[in-house]
Length: 404
Image (tube, rainbow, N blue to C red; front, side):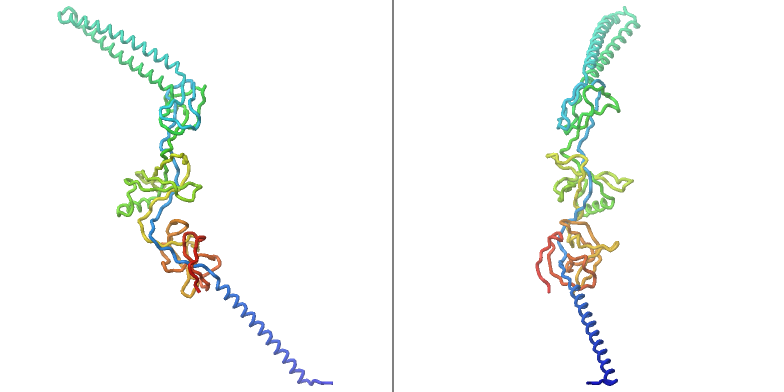
């Protein structure tokens, strides 16, 4: 039987303690190494980088506006009476001069006949006055007629001539009123519904005349939009320096898209700029005119207009989706030479096309900007980049090279 003395027991206890401490230190060191390894793997997140597009462009400004008819007329009665007939179908295309409504003509025919009869009476009175005056005119030379009688017959002739003119005016007025019983289209265009059905009495010839219908001319059609005072000043200065056409004298191109369209497919020309800045809004109104032969465009529709906002110049552009926001600061993530993520504050311009945003300041054409995994990276992180080329939107990136 083996016996252990006190010193042997003490040494064994110390040995076990040293072994436990060594195991603990080894485990801790291994865990720390695994953590560092995991952090290294996270730091090496793969990202795609691309150089900004740098090419000559013409900037475009966009404005929201509304379509209006090139001509719009409220058709109202010019004489009062019983509405006898409606001669059109609601919503059809009518031509200028087409009879739309007929008001009962019988009272106006009677009035015309009465005016003609009065004219005939006045004509007979004129004939009598002329005969009486001719008889006394020869007697005046012989002195057989008093001056008073001569003047009386002369005045009667003048009165008869005036009566003829009055009677003729009444005939003309009666003819005009009879003509107004046929309410005709003053312009060609699309007619609305009949606001008053046949069989109703209508009031005419006053500011409160009955509204019968409306007609709008929609080919060509107008598009109205407003721009700010600063935009107006910029356009004027560009025109004076020869970098842009004069808005009031040149037919500048305008491109319009509708609410359900992605592209500006409707071509128009700028034909009007208002003569003053609105005191309340600080804006100025402009108008574009475009053909509408297929009648797709209707008055009252909204649209967005795009027109030239600058001369041709070279500009940097990046996809709008990669631009971040930190309160009022806009930034773009880029890579340093050692593949570390850096944040660059940028000054932005307007959207150009295909989702590309113009960058005024903050980056250079040689910068490598990060175009994916934007939410997973932060400044100072080391990443594993692969080079791509920007074609338009972020989803349209083409890989051209692999960077080690």
